[in-house]
Length: 221
Image (cartoon, rainbow, N blue to C red):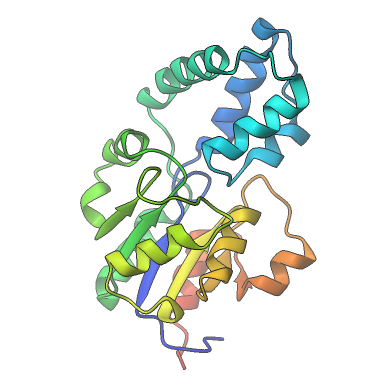
């Protein structure tokens, strides 16, 4: 299964480590009518895995250049933070996979389109920050996913060869970014379907992080 030995693991965050994508969709759908818009699932799926600038561009294209984007983002952020601070849920298998990486002695990083503050809120409450050797978040790179730069930055932070890194992603743009960086990539779908493109780019598709842990017990190249 493994074309090369895995020497480091790089995790996306939203939708992979924490169940924040569904929360964000529910918040945007609830806040939208206050601004005279409807945020449907089709629109939201187009935003998944994009940096903030890419997401806002899609929303502005849909609702017009006079849409009060900053006010909308502030309202979404306020409600979303209140929900997340009450306790964002971890995705299945997170702790078990991190424990297994400890046994294997593999370094690991978070590579996300979210801000460092968001990482602290979402992972800090579970005591997970210290379980990663590096955090690469918005502001640490010029070009967000699907550009490979965030993943290349993460590999550099771990002093790892990108080709020896395993990247774990739930989004199409994340899989594109990791694959472009030359990484072995596993897609763990959350809200997006697995397309033929994803099957071509990813080394494998896993239903949960429990499966990723099992994959890592297999004999490597």
